[in-house]
Length: 231
Length: 269
Image (cartoon, rainbow over the protein chains, first blue to last red):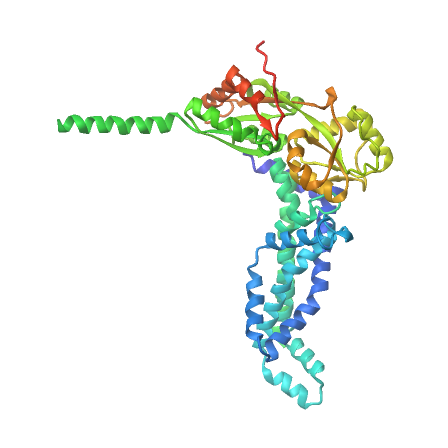
C-alpha cells in the first residue's frame, strides 16, 4: 500500500482549489460554528446557575449533565433521526438529511461540554468577585457577568472544546445528514466515505484540514490565555 | 505401548497444525446487494460444508471491493460492473474471471410518482422524463456497481447529473433508499435490497423489466503473481464451487420473500 502517492495527490487537490473539496470544508465549518454560536449562551448560563445557585436536585442535575458528556453521539443521532423522520413527530418540517439536522445534532453534542466546563470554571473563580460586585452596587445579572468575565478563559476553553467535538463528529452527522454531496457532506463523513471507496487522497486532504483547524483554534486559545496570564 | 501413544499424539498434533496452516481461510470482498439480499448467508454455509473451509466476506460497493482486491487485502471478489472488472483483470490484479449470475435493477420512487414514470420499461426513457420533470433523484454516489450503472444511463441520454435535484449520498443501497423515502425522491436499486426496504421506505417499483436493467455478477480471483500471499487456492476452490452445477443450482434455488432474485448464468466456453 503506497502512502506517498495519495498524500501528494491530497496536497495537489487542496491547493488546486477543488470546489467539491472546499464545499465540504466550508459546510463543516459553518455548521459547527453556527451550532456553537446558538448553543453557547444558554449552556453557559445554565452552567453558571448550576455552579452558583443552590436548589433541590442541583447535585442530580450536575451529575446528569456530566453523564451526558459520555453519551454516544450515534445515540444522539438516533434520537434526532426518530424525531425528524417523515414518520416522526417533527417530520412535517422536513429537516432530516439537511444541514439543519446536523446542526441540531452538534448543538446536543456540544451542550454538555459547554455546561460542564462552565461549571468547573465558575466554581474555580474567587467567590469574592461576585460578592464585591454586589457590594459595589451591581445587580445580580451584572455581578454574574462580572464573574463570567473573570473566568473568560475557562469559558473560552469550553467553547473551543465544544467546537472541536462537533466538527470532528461523524456518527451523528452521517445518520441525520445522510452524507449528501454538496448538501450535507462534511469533513468527517467525506473521510469515512472516501476511505470505503478506496479513494484515499481526498480523505487525507480533508483529514489534514481537520487537524489544521483543531490546531489553529487551540493555538488561538493558548495565545489568548497567555495574554490573560500576563496581567 | 506408551511411546507408541506419544508418537500417535504427536502425529495428530502435527496434522492439526498442518491443517490449520494449509487450509487458510478465504477472504472475499463483495457488494452490498449479495449481502442485503441474504444470498450469502444462504450460499456460504453450503460452500463451507462442501470444502471444509471458512470464508469471510466484507460487503462494500463494487468500486471498493475491487480496490480491496487491487491492494491484495482479499483473495477473491464477487462484484457487478463488467467494465471495471475487465479493467481489474487487464491491469493484472485479477485472474480467472467468470460469469456467475445476474439479477435486475428497478427504478423506485414515491407512490405519488410526480414524474409520471410508472409502468415504463426502458430506464433511459424513464430517467429522461424524470429529469425533465425536475423530480429529485437520489444517487448512491459511492462508485458501486449500481452507481456505475446509473451513471452509464445518464451518459447514454446525454445528461450530466447534478444540481439541487440530484442527491449523491455516498452510502450503501439501504441508506440510499432510506434517504429517497424521506425525500420522497426516486432512485435506482437492485431488486433484492429494494425488497428489504420496501415497507420501511414506502417506495414503489415504477420501472422494471427491461434488458438494460439486467445486472450481471462476476467472480474474480486476486492474482497470486501480484500478491504471492493471497489464498489463491482457496479463491479458486470458491470460484469452482460457485460455477459448478451444485453452486449454480443453489443460486437458482435461493428465494427471498418467495421470489427468485438471482439467476445463475455460468457458461463454460
